Length: 231
Length: 231
DNA sequence: CTACCTTAGTGTAATCAATACACTAATCCC
DNA sequence: GGGATTAGTGTATTGATTACACTAAGGTAG
Image (cartoon, rainbow over all chains, first blue to last red; front, side):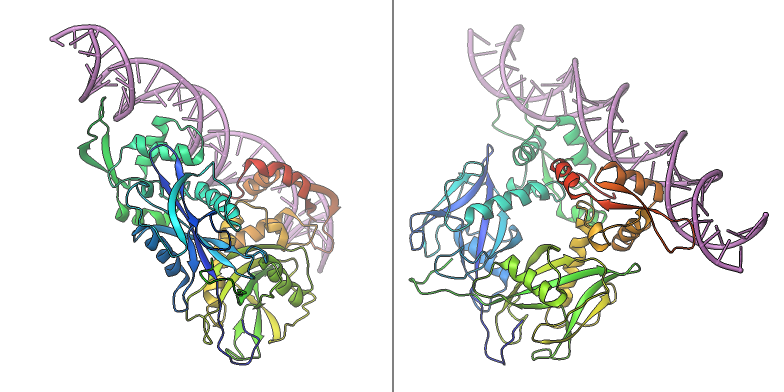
């Protein structure tokens, strides 16, 4: 809200993105190594200055796309971070986002201009990070743990077709507690947005699990009511 | 996250604040009338450009203080709004906050430099607002409705001493649904952060209600566990 | 081809939380 | 003293959450 006469106004601000992935074992966060000052050689979450004509959400999507090549990814604004000393070169606020992407492993196309490489890192043993990124990642983790209880984002971490056990493992990893198998299945199936496929796992040396997929349309119809997952 | 060499960086951005109050009848929002272009004569939520050395949360607290004289108020960051055309003079992002203040009526010390007057307005029949402030207020309302179910912010709208009926009415107004009196009392008292006072309402022409106050310390001890209010 | 290993898949009873519901008690006013 | 108004209280029903253990299927190794 300007108090000046009518000059052109302008904000430089950055958009940073906490990208979550899952490798079947652990929750991961995608970090880059900076190759520029300040914080050259430090690990950081990917980000960039927003361009002038760009919506703030678009800027975040672009950061993600530049790094991963992905589009149409689950992404949500976390919050703005604006401690006056968070950037050594002066006042730069950042708007943090978090994203959840499938199959954390394949196809990392680094890189934005100031990163040398991108690495998946276990979310609960992060290295020191540049700027206030430690704080941002912690906030994103907290948000993720909360959101997963209301919003079906477990699926976003899995391939299109998945077994209920795989899905349950994600909830267990993110919520960091064991979940009863029968109760989990009962509840998640009762919502009616999982479509049972006539397919089974392949290549496993034991009984193969039935595969399911997430049905976005059914979910949209149901979500009016508001409901919980995993209690 | 800068891609330039090492110049001084700088962000202009505004902080806007949705201030909620309650007059015993309706939920209100504090609006100002702008006296400067752009949007001169329009109603808007109070806000200002952040100063360079100021924490973002402090900037929001300052906006509130300048307008109301209040300090130590419940306040929370809502989110950043950054559509490229949200400000006619160019790119200005804003970080929106919402605040909840007691006794909506007394002691409005307007004003910041660009406002002529400040007015309480019913939250569910707002006038047209400047910039994207309509959208910001709607987001704040949504957040408030959600937060009040987890966090004891009903008290913030009431004087220090209040009756359970007064408290219940706030929940009814904000959640926009009737609540059963017995169930409400049972639940809210079961949390144990309300202290029963040896005082009653005065000046009412019927049975006087017992007064309670919110006990911050007891709440702090309890809130580890996480719990709900009004379901 | 049999035994074994591993994971998939399934139901019920017990507990806890949420809801629905109606009368008596206190105070003021006339 | 009677009427009006709001405060204050308990119980039974329902629905949701939890705890819990065995059989089924498929693959592998002998």
